[in-house]
Every structure is written in structure tokens, then in C-alpha cells.
Length: 400
Image (tube, rainbow, N blue to C red; front, side, top):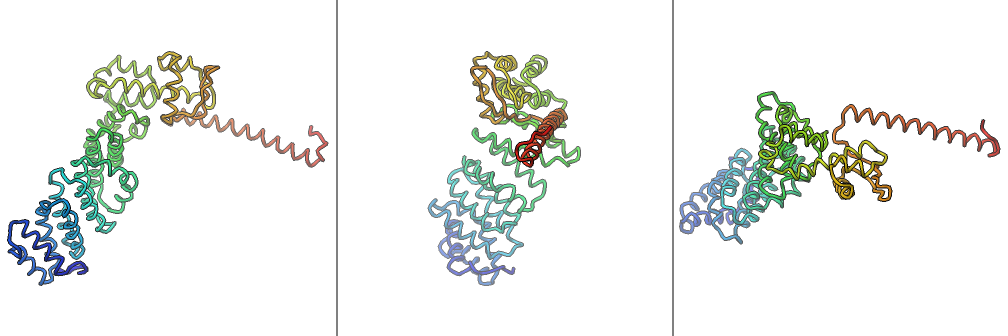
């Protein structure tokens, strides 16, 4: 096979690796594996030789940890001399034993896989395969937290560069969500990738859409019970989620999108107790806290800009007036509103409120506010025009 280059192939490098592999296989120095590898090398079949090494690379995992990375890095360097038609098989044979190996030495394995990833062209679809391997090794070795910065910063761009198909993209997001789900502190990130998975079904036909039902159901559960999730519109409107609209779980999601504490109480009283206890892990305390925060954001949203009294907030949240300030602080910290409290007047002065959904009612309200702003601007323009007339008259005249 033709090779793209022979920059890394030298007798010393390639045959040293052949001898090491042979010894790890239990052979004597310069034994059968070494001898056959030397023949392949001397015939100039560099791609065949790299593939030969890759297929036996599992034995490299038996070396001491201090030698693990240097030896694998030599193999990875030699892959640059393999022709492109054998590179996919070479990469597969390198990553499979690493992924299937025990969880020990995870950091060393991740560095090896990262080196392999970086030695592939940025637009190579093989980077996708290596990245999946990195996820698997990180999950098995409890090292997923080290991937979060890379995921947040580069994943979208990388997926576009890899040029992978829709099914592969879905597999990536699903694998990420399942792996991150297993780590307690990374459940919000798991929800993020579950959401991305569901977003890939927006143009899917009915049979394909149906395959997303289990993930859609889990995403609804995540959104409801994770304390940090307070935006439900992006999930609620997805086609994959809309197909479960007849379920009590979807009804509860709708309440968290645009309902209030009263609506939640009615839901639980009527048909939702089983949903909370069985499908939502009995986390009613979390649900009540979230719906109270959302209710407060809704109450504040009716008075932007303006004031709302402690008494009204306490009534809507079903709490004592003495608890109102704590709830206001929590909602401000969550970014749902911008407001200040007037403790003397017992009012909350609201300057901004996040709309939980933007429907016709919100558009109408926005139109009214823009209309009022426009009229106010007209008055300002009149004052400016009058000032100009007065100035033009020497500052002594009076405009009738």
C-alpha cells in the first residue's frame, strides 16, 4: 500500500515497537512477531505494518504506567505513515482495547486518546469515534468532570467539522447525557445534552419521532426536578415532547411553563400525586420550591416596571409575609427578576422580569409598552422643539 509519508518510519522506531509487542506476547527478543514485522517493513508496506501493530495493541496495556504513554505515542506517531484507506481500521484497533480495559489508569488512557484525536485531521470523521472512546473511558474512570470545559467550548464546532451524520450526532448527545447522568454534580449538563438530542428530531417523520419518546419523558422529569432548570419553553415546544402531550407528566410541565402554585396544587390534588411520587422520585419539596419561584416571577412580571406588595406575594406563594424577602432574594439570584425591596412600604420595586413564555398576551403587552414609550417620546420631542424656538427668539419669547 502507498503511504502518505515515511517521516516517522525508521528501523529503530518501528522495529523497536515490533520487538516490544513480541516480548509482551511472550516471545523471545526478535522472535516471530518481530521477524514478520521486519519483512513487512522492508517490503515498504507501511500501512500493513501499522495495522499489524494496532491489531495487537492490547498487549501494550500490560506495560508499567510510566511506559504506557510513551509506547502508545510511538504507535500513534507511526499511524501518520498509514494510507487513508487503512486508517479507520487502525484507529478502531487502537481505541477498542483501551475502552474495554478496566477503569484503572484512566488519566493516562485519556491522554493517549487525546493525542490520537489531535493527530487526526480536524475534519476527520474518525475524531468522532475517538471522542466517543474518550467519553467512555472518562465515564468508567470517574473523570467526566475534566471534559466539561471542552464540551462547553468546542463541541458544537467539532461536530460540524467532523461532518458526521444525523444518527451519529444523536448517538453522541445520547451517550453524553447517559454518561453525565451517572455523576451527581453533572446532572444539569446531562439534561443539556438530552435536550440537544431531542432538538435533532424537529424535522423527523412520525415513526422516527416515536423513537425519541423515552428520552423526551426523561427530559421532562429532569427539567421538573433539577433545581437549576427554570426555563421550560425550549423543552415544551419540541416535537419529540409534544407527542407525549396527553400524559399527566406533560400537563405538569405545562403548569411549570405558564401556571402558578395554585394550578400545581390543583393538579396534585386531582391526578398528579402518583406522578410526583412515582415518576418524579417523590421530590415534591423541590417542585413546590420551583413553582413558588416561578409564581413570584409571574406576579412580578405583571408590574414591570412597578411595585408589588408583600401581602400579594405572600398570598400567591402561600407563605407568611415574613418569608417574602427570602423568596424575592432567591428569585433575583436565579435571574428571574431584577428588583429592589422597600421594607418600609413592604413592596418590591420590579425593573425587569423574565417571561416564562412569549405568547400573544406577551406580544400585546409589549406592544402597549412600546406605544406608551412612543407617545412619551413625542412629548419629549415637543419640549425639544419648543426649546429650539425659544432659543431662536433670543431666549425672551414665549411660545403660545
